[in-house]
Image (cartoon, rainbow, N blue to C red; front, side, top):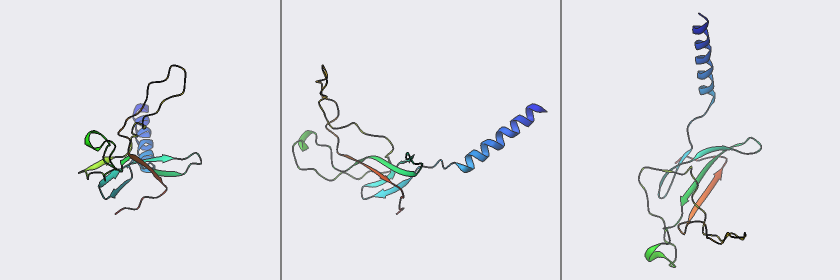
Length: 119
């Protein structure tokens, strides 16, 4: 009997938690396609939407190297905009740290907003 009661209490608490927690991710649409970001909480407990690694130009590789930027291509489906992208190449000014870090394909934008307007 005690075991059944403990399971019932656990299920009720789990349902209560799930009903109070927004587990969905923010979504929006830009000219190139749909984006799915993530919710973050600021240091003063404000909930914001974050969309990271949004391409704002074609990667400057191959024939596009040292050329003016071109608009990014459209994508199908929903782009996962909840993960960061590597930084642009940098030299670290530390002893023994002369290897450049980063990626030449770094034309990405991060957007943090308190409100997402759906289209």
